Length: 241
Image (cartoon, rainbow, N blue to C red):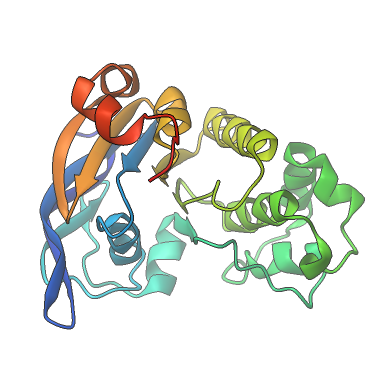
């Protein structure tokens, strides 16, 4: 570990029902950067995020945040330390308003929320316009903005995003990627799981290729975009696998 690594996974393994989904992977997420995990469905990417968030039990290996071992800590404890997860499928509270959803993101906080709500509205003007609208009536792209905004309300140092482009129209996907870059420029470190490898690698400082629970290739975003094996597997015409 080095001091500038916000997150370090050391030989992490996770199993489901006797099947090892993550097989002794090691990776680092430097502070202030966007790091992406790309790979096909079932490669273990989401499991890695859930293990970091304390939602899935770690079989072996260690998770370090800064230089503190957080392996096996509760999800609440991990959120309090500055790590939050934007889950796949957005999972907003459909029968609550946009504002109520944002406040839920700050459920562990005891301080005043007004400045941070205004900051979220500055990042996402559409959320301000729809602050009293029920979240379930928002478009898919707006719900993704709300999911990111809700995560930001916990004042995280590290946001993990699981498939933020899933199910969105191409023009909205580009908007979401621009939002990720904006959040990163605001000083938040990002660990991004994304099947749209082409777009993910274009915004990432560094990337890892995950296949059947293993890290098979790694490099800067540019290096992986130009890697022939990555091109063949993940950067074809479909852009999604």
